[in-house]
Length: 572
Image (cartoon, rainbow, N blue to C red; front, side, top):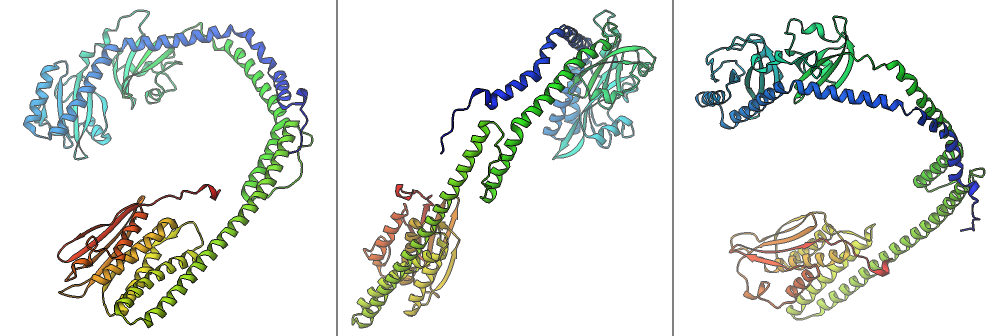
């Protein structure tokens, strides 16, 4: 890297940006002169919070009763769902509840058809045509409604409902009826800490209770807002004009679970003049806008556009590994010029290293392919020499031993031929290797006159050569032993070979038919070379061969963990 002279502090990017921003933001310091305006703002906030708290306090009695009814309806609904619908038991439960909570005029489970069979009183009444019933079963959700003429009490009541589901299907609702006389909203004391008027309403904008009564409640509402709109803003304090033309303060607070809200109406506060607030707010806003504009222009001219250009060059280099070797920041700060120089040097180094790495990988792959090819040729040459010795041998036992040895050599040659043919020298589809060595072993068995019905079910299992080679040779030995000792007294001999992988474990299973055989032919009872090789290959895979047998079949299985590649230090 070329030597870079130390940048004078007056020309540094930080100094330039700090100087420009200091000039741009200097006017904001004058805002401290107007800090007295914050007193007015804080006073408004205190007033707003006080009104919210006082309105909440004024409706506390009604809030407690409604929350109690809401919770009771929810508990009874869950009890009906758990116990199932039995009219007698359900009726007894409702009557017990109403006896313990006499302030409620009715507790009932009302099914969709509107027939009262489960109720604390009024059993047998049909409410299927009443408007509130139709509204509740249509919405199928918790609700609080008002009824000026209750079906049973024939008085003005609030209806608190909770849906009931049987087996996931809507079956009806539990209803708690709260008389208006219990709420005692009309007894609100007339003091400075209570609103002039107070009403409650649900989320749909339906008035539930009002200190003025239902007849005059609409007249005290604000002109340009509906109760449904006001419910969506709770909690909130706002001023407005009533429909009677009076200026009022309206305070909205939630009462029950965003289902019921209280609206308190207070006299207007004459000392809260918004006209004085406008200039106080306007001045710092204008100063802030001016500072931001000046600061943005300065930063963009000094650094922003140069950084964007360099960023585009970096992204283009990341995508296509090319870059234009020319300087575009000759008139920018020293830090940005040094950054561009470093990027160009880094890009050149990366391209050079990438080219050398690709060339090294290409040479390595060619060398590995050549190694596998030569090993395969040498093994085939050994197989040819062994074939000549087999033809000259006079002893059948010698021919059999040499033939089996030749099969093992050909199996290893097949493995190296596959390793030579694959594109990636790192991993091998061992499923193809197992199929090939198995078929080769079976062909050798068939040539000796031993006919076997074979089923090979092998998945594509990707392994590194350290596991692929011993697994392929293990499959060859298992197939050879099975083909040698397979017998079936009742029909055609058979064998099956399965290779599967699940998560990070692979399993090889070989099952063959079983008949009369020599006692020493099975693994564990023989000291033959085949069984020794099977155990050796299993050890290389970090596992052991598990065998089992019945009167009709013999089974050998090995399960091992698929290892990740662990490079040696010389691989780097």
